Image (cartoon, rainbow, N blue to C red; front, side):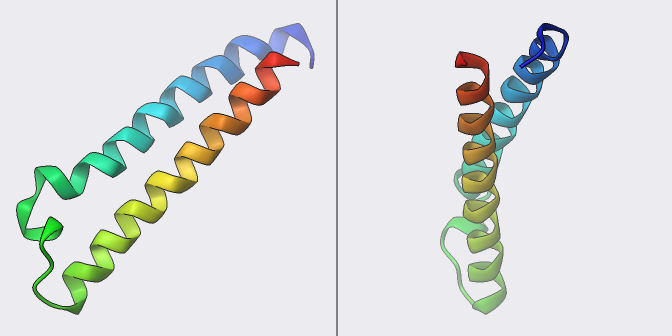
Amino acid sequence: MKKRYRPWLKAFSAISGNISAAWFAVPFIAPSISFPKDKSDFLVLTYDIGFGIVFLFLTVWCEGKLEK
């Protein structure tokens, strides 16, 4: 990887890590979502966890690229 892209990748990794943490925190912050009462609440909870996993994988990928 070219040295000029490393700071950008490092910044993107940090941002995606924070976004991942936020997606995982949403169900705990909004109690109406963390204890789903109907299908729409369960769908929102599933999306929150799904997006958290996606951004977590993005963070891991960026960190892996930075180690090379």
